Image (cartoon, rainbow, N blue to C red; front, side):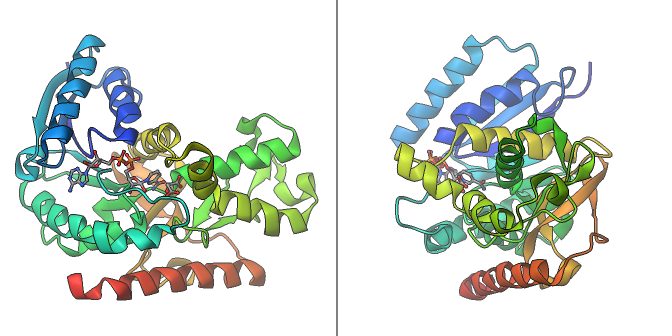
Length: 326
Ligand code: NAD
Ligand code: LMR
């Protein structure tokens, strides 16, 4: 039997985790023959720890053959100990009328502490995926605290946006969504994100030729994808949870499957004109378990470049807003 992967999850009693943990334990994230140990971290508050006990009971009651151990803790040093993957979900969600960046003040400090602890106690091959909003900048904050783990190990999730874009395009074109390929998210997980369509295809043909409606692509399409999170909050009274968990499964599964090309927020290193020190959504190709290269040769028209400049500027401003913390 393979050695179990240790997966630390923060916010383990929250909404996203209530979908996520069962998918991980069932094998959806790491594959049907890969055992896992879940290291579940919550805040040291009785109500949260009690809810976590309930989640653990349900995990046991699923009798997942791949689930080889459960750790429940409010001590991040215990939770991240020897973790191979650290999934940073635990953070405050936004409410109606808020932007994700409004959460920086409350959530930013969580990632300072967790970045330090992960760097100190996680496994040598540890990888980090940040979901808690604003995800890109929280990821930059966590990475800024690491001395041992390289910055490339810290990724943030824009996969939910990629999945949203793929579904919208398939609906518009009236095709099965598996026909939509190479749609990637650039920049911030915020309304400024750019779901760049010029290199996307539908059934092997250039997307623009199939959809033929540039005005829709540049307007309503970008707007729907960029503001989908707010639309869900308005409809549900709570932020997306099951689709976010599903996107994190996709994010980690594709980062551990060599050859996959997908959207991940990573340290930009200057690709596509992004500031080298922001974490921007970019197309990456997975090169090994947890390692990747950024695909840098997609050509961008002037209009796309203008959109990338806007989302880059927002990331630079978010970084400036937390510079005192770093
Ligand atoms: P939730 O409020 O249901 O759960 C969050 C949980 O995190 C709570 O149980 C809370 O006690 C816990 N928590 C808070 N601080 C913690 C800490 N320091 N350590 C450990 N646990 C901690 O929220 P949710 O719906 O699960 O959403 C979690 C976060 O994910 C929010 O910030 C939300 O905005 C974000 N989110 C991101 C995306 C994305 O695409 N990147 C999608 C959906 C939601
Ligand atoms: C989403 O995109 O659904 C999440 O980031 C939650 C939110 O605040 O929009």
